[in-house]
Length: 371
Length: 247
Image (tube, rainbow over all chains, first blue to last red):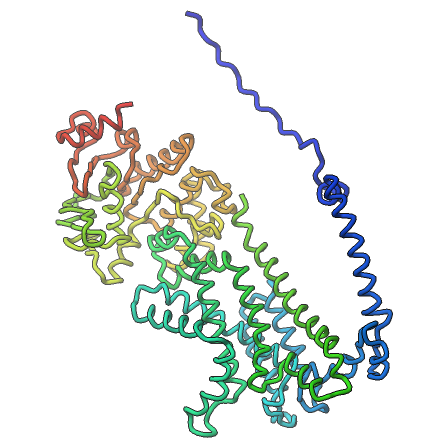
């Protein structure tokens, strides 16, 4: 019998792929001119886009009227946009019925709030003192808006309006609803029957009614149950309504994330001796929340736009202020469309920023999943 | 001193009303003993060791671990869990934390150890399982065998008196089983009390002081590995061994 010699194993060195799939030329070829039908489609779409863009350019810029002159606007109706309505009414749209002479106050307050939200989103500011900044900026916001201190004349909350009101309702709706939602989501999964039932009851009750009816209850029905002049301010009641409403939806989204965490994670934390709250805070929530970032952001954007419903209880936020500014003014009412485009732009800037920010957050949390 | 560190007296457990998963379990384990538990699936092996750190509750009988009786009292559970480390079939590492953070988590949060000290202890344990160079990676970037060694190191960071292994090599590729068993064998040399549910009969022969064979929620036979593998007294264990060792 001959002895068989072992053959050696020679690994083949890795080579790069021959066809380049990167670069703009490769992209054009792959996506636009891949085949005959795709060339035709590309061509047709290009013609349509150029045609549309040309029209838009003429309507929006070349034929448009920028001066606050309604006669001139009437003259170009149908041919060009009347941006004059924005030039004329922007202060009313942005600040509602807030007294004209005092409008620097909501302006400053809005800037402060935007600044506060912006730095809260950035990693270098995620320190303990950020809570302190919130504790300072939020009262300053209210003092600026409400006055009656530091020599500022008082402005009652029913005169607040426009962008600061939208920002206030959305920001506090989100900031207050989120922790409440986390607690409710955890509560719905609790092993204690009392806590679980209360959470289920809350979610199902709130989800079962439209936001408008909650706002109605908050502003008209709720005071009936309290002694006259002892019910909290309508703005506070509406803020509470929005917060409770959003928290119920958010809680279900977060519960979805909690559901997705394997039981073994909790068991491992248990065997290491971590308490319930340590386990939730260090192990379960970081993973669960990461999983549902897209849905959470969906909710946040929803809250921002739902604030436009508070007009129904006579709080004139951005959308409401626009109606207030134009509906009673026959001269400018025909140009409501352009004015709407203006607030569309404002809403879009905020919503788009939120969604880009969420993409960034998703990237930040992705590293642990990379192999 | 051959005192029991773990004792089961007439322990019974049911899942729901009808599934009687542990039946009249009596078991004494001495300090430093190395025990392998084997048996067909569904025989209650995993449930048995999961009762030791109260991942499962038993309904009848008493379980004592290091002098503490396990009951609904939360402080007794905490007391026991400090002494008992556990390694799972599916590793159960925390994927959002680095390897080092996985190890320092319990020392810093449960034992309130300063961060530097916890890291030093963690690195010590990572060296022990020969994986120190992976400290800053995330668990999913490691191979299965590496992950399981990290899991062992994580359990050791709390310096437990007892280590429980629940099928630690069952989810591993064949080439990685040995690296985990090597680490476990080394651990066995160092006097820690070990209970290991496994089908690695070679490991049982080499390391165990006692082999426990379970079927249908009962302890069918327990003996030294030599006796168990060569002279099984029960026909059920004989049958099981012929199927496991047969090929």
